[in-house]
Length: 489
Image (cartoon, rainbow, N blue to C red):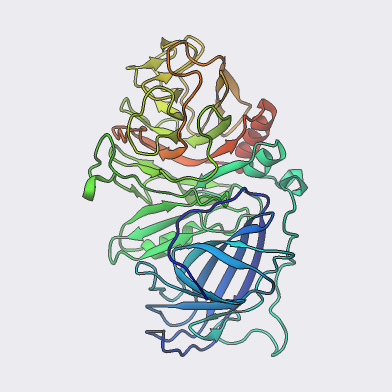
């Protein structure tokens, strides 16, 4: 028998997405349940697959009476074995798996859901489990059975595991499909507004309400679609909610959570940074309501224990969609690569997108705001420290911001996320200051703060990714075209 405990990260390279959904219900009675459940739905998604291994996300939706604790059981159909699991604890005996809630996610209200994820190994084949049971009773998708006994529930045909992203029809490719087709796959993909892979149907973010500290995961309305803002509105009605997790869609488990103290302590308990108000940045995407991440000074998210993010002088790219009218001169509204200990570890230990109008370290033309690169101990607008004439003030309502870097070469690009192409503001050698060639990137991910947890900044984030490898301009133009087609308004 194999025993497991809570894990919060994924390991292994991402190959492809295979989203597979199973649904179920039934009357529940078991010694492990503290309340009865009359119906349930289970969504099992193979989020990534590589030779001998895979990652999966599982979402349980309670369609019946509320439960205060749960166990989910299933049997693997081949030789799969769980190797890591997060947001739950597990046991596995042969093919039989039992996953039990942990302290913070045992309660599921009627219509609510909870999720966990895991890494596994496989040999020969990796079929999706055909049946799940919540607290001892098989799930079939409603409060009463919806299929004739002996007839399996109707499910979408499974995609073949390992199918490369380029098989996605070009018209339906989303940013991370496009990066994968350009041989610079996403190693982190964060958005509270929409899926960034055409096949992604997992969690986008999690909210926690003030009235009872309950949490709810928010996913897209459909695979590859816009966030289900109505689910958030319903869950948060009559109270306030904070964004507690911004999930990584890449399958590597590079989720963003409340930033811990570092060189600077945050204003929240224990020196942590504040969490963003979940309704402070409303927007629409393709005509559907969604919410961004509103960063007020003191707010910040971080992951210091990432998987697959560039380190040292390895090549990488990143883009983010910001509100170009929400900024300040504080340090530092960043998204990207930072130190793993939340402290200033010297020149070249960061590579992140900065947006704002601070002029302490570097600046461009006009009064700002500017897209710059935070490379630690310097915000760079070009090859020089201080002023660089080619970096313009740019303040579109929805702004595409790009920074990318490789050995002794980096670039800044940007544009209007609602129309047009990208402009290149810098493309050349690393800064003409000591410590930046070669780079010494450490591979943590930050949002809304500096690498040492400087948290005086303001801004709004809607979506962003980080890649393995240095993306071509053509790949980024294709991503920009998709962003424009998403219809941010």
